[in-house]
Length: 240
Length: 254
Image (cartoon, rainbow over all chains, first blue to last red; front, side):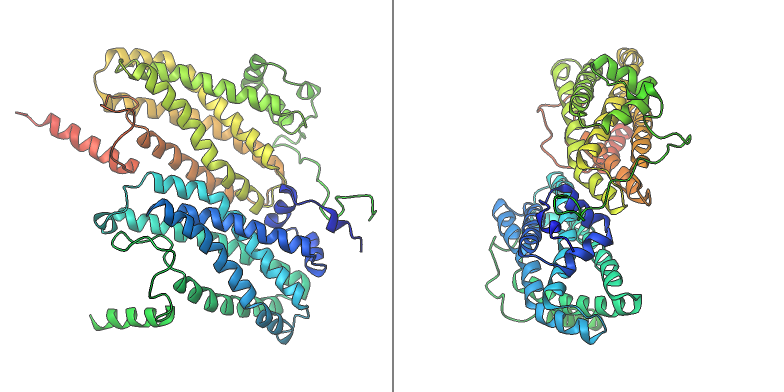
């Protein structure tokens, strides 16, 4: 195999190849991961998720925009690194014989796709925030607050789905069967969601709340966890 | 694969597909003639859109894109003067600025997502080519608005209703946008996209952004104390408030 894939400078055509899901070159990049490509994917994640994080936090305050711009990429990268060994072990156990570097490369590429999409949506998110009344305790009670939250949820959900669709296509290409690709994808999704949701809980807030001060993380960040909170919320709903 | 071929890891560019009538772009020699002037760009957009689409895919398309954006700005300013003539005073200069800046800002906000949707659909288009299509869309939209300008001016001079004039300008904008989006779709279809669903979603987003921009930059037809509004509203809320205010004004005895 030629080493010329290492010589291709990242330009929009390489990112476009990832976004289009051209499986042949992507499979080549996954089977022969290089440090240069891993670093470049990381840069796209930091830039793309960072700029979207800024758009999310801007509604509360410029400081919140800066904090969210730092935290959003940190969550993505910590999730990837935190689960790297586990993902690499799950893949061969589920029938996909790839190495640690290859599994890390595949997961990073799917997050790169998602981050690029978020970067493209960040002007739209910023436009929605620019058109919204300032975040006050009264605004939080209105349709506007729910609408802004929904916009962010929709954008992040779309980006995540697109990233995972590309990952699934890559796994099918590497593994040869849809069954193996599905098993590995669901396993990776489950562990990434499990760790990612708790990291998001610890590193909250991202949008912020008008009644609480602007802060990088809450003082009670390490008290409780995401799933406890969900469980308590469900209990409260059922007890009403 | 050759070690001297730096792009061997990237799939080769596919030749452009045939157009809807079966002919590939550039098949007609007239389409391959470069567009060198602003008037040439206007003529080509109206009479030879395939020539514009072909030239946008050539390496030296920057000049054409610049000309199209220049035409869009100028036509937007002229139409803005007609819009501003309804209220006069500050709107003589505020309306043209708001319309031109608003159109450009809407396009800039939506350009990255257009490129993303194109890539996700499997399109081979580069970002610069998408930018060119968007510039063409803006030029065609504003050219058509300029065509409606005499009609708009006549109604401006013979009507006192702000809401009525706003609705009329909205109708003209809708017609212009339909033709402009037709140009965009024709260009988009030549980039090997597997599906046009992404483009349709983007069109909805683009229309919503433009509609919201008219509210964000209000007033454009009426008058106000400040250049920009002090209160933030979404466009549907603004329209409902305008309709309610007009209904209250019509109540007998008020």
